[in-house]
Length: 445
Ligand code: ATP
Ligand code: MG
Image (cartoon, rainbow, N blue to C red; front, side):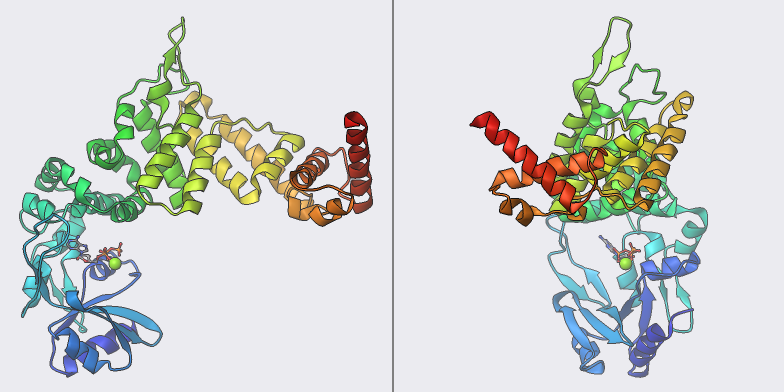
């Protein structure tokens, strides 16, 4: 059941007289028939005893919390001493960590029944809270009294929704009730931790359902979504309100964090720009710009890295831009965006359309056409980017251009090449540039 390296670590601890188990997410995943990404180990041995046993092959990662990282055959494992958690005074961090004598204590502090099982090296399962039954029935249920568990650590609120989204599980009634009641606690949680859980949630197979069911929880750290809930679009293109459209658009795009966050945020400012014409049709002029601005705020607040934030913001800004299914139009889009971003944009457009009224799904065909044109343009190895241009800035400086005029001329050359009015040929480009410089001098002189 376990990979050899895990067995080696467990056996070594056992041979030294310490109980040792694989625990948490890896046991859950094994029972679900999935390959765990990593294995966490829990043991009766104290951190210094673990360190002594794996002398030279470990790092004291979080000694205060009883965690030692052990290396075995090129893999790393977190080995953590059985512990109970002391009182939480701030709803974030336990004020003291106490080591425990028994596995039972360690399992009791874990968040959900499906995450609170342990397995020894023989494959024997310890399941004290009905984790197996909940796994079989697809239920996320707190270990212990839900309200108290969410008050101890409010991140568990989001974790419950995250596991429901990724495993496709439902939330047990009392757990659901308590998480809704305790949701304000999320205000005390560090933005980074919210971002990590929210990203995993969004990438889950059931993200859309969870978004639809629990908007008030997400509204604690993204109040911008709340006006979207139930907002009637008054539009023949849309059979869903803004929030349901959003949730369905999230499900319709592949499980990539950038794309999933883009779909979550793409229409977020729609309620803010809504207008109705004389015929009663709803319009959302300028919603991509306003949504991109709101996205920027949210991503900044959640401490996204700059690169990801810029990407998401740009995709939100462009999600509604028209690209004609012609060589020229697609070539221009390639020039402005580059291949990877254009591919992402087309994926966003596809998902956006899939979450609209059935009657307008013919757009799917148009997007396929755009992808085909892009493929054939790329296959021809045409030039779309500055670095592919047959001249560079230095060449232009030799013609006497300076400063920003260099960049501007390069862009003009690239536009002409992409539009097909000029060949990407060094001599031709230099001639064209010289001609333009001469004309400009005449005009100004
Ligand atoms: P993943 O597959 O995403 O890693 P996981 O279950 O391993 O899922 P982790 O965040 O790695 O999740 O946590 C490992 C284990 O530690 C959990 O399975 C759970 O038993 C316990 N745990 C983690 N966070 C908490 C928490 N906030 N409160 C209580 N127990 C927690
Ligand atoms: Mg894990």
